[in-house]
Image (cartoon, rainbow, N blue to C red; front, side):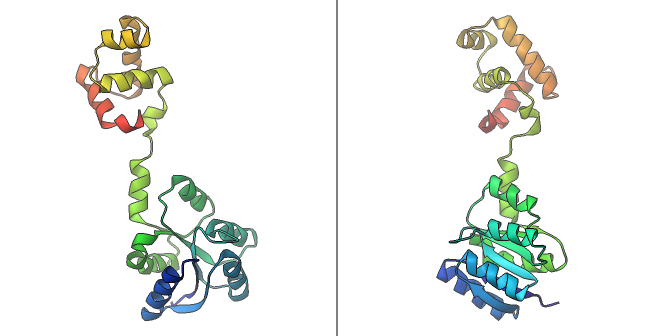
Length: 207
C-alpha cells in the first residue's frame, strides 16, 4: 500500500529535504504545510493516511494537531519529528496514541522504516530516543527510597564510613546502619558491605 501523506515543518530546508526524499522514494505526497494551522486544514481537507508533523510550529504544535485529530475522530496517523529528547513530550505523544516519533537528526534514515511500520499499524519511536529515555529514567527501586535514605546512599557512593555519614547528617552511626539495612532490603541487595557502594556508584546520577 502506498499511503497518502502530508508533511508540515516551519523550517524550509527541512521541509524541502523531506519532500524531495519522499518523492524520490515514490511515496504519495499530497501536500506540504509551513505551519500548524495549514497542516490541520490539509488534514481535514485530504484525510491523508499519514501526517508527518514537526512538533514545534507556529499557530499549532504537532501535539496540538494530534489532539484535534483525536477529538475529531480523524483516522490520519500522526508521525512527529523533533530535535528534542524530551520525556514529557514523549509521554504526551504516547497518551495521544501517536504512531511515530522520529528525531530530526535521523529523520531521513528513519522515516522510511517509520512509514512502513505505521502502515502495518505498528507505532515507531526513534531507537535513539527510547534508549535516551530508558537511560535517564530513575530506576523503580530508587523511587521507593525516602529522602534520608537517598542522602545516605549518595554518601555511601562517595565511599564514606558510617561514622563519617553520621557526623555529616548529625545522627548516630547506629541510625546510619539501620538506614543502610532498610536500603538494602528495599533494593534487594545482599548484606555484603560492597553491594551498597556498588549500587550507589552505578546509579549516582539518580541520587
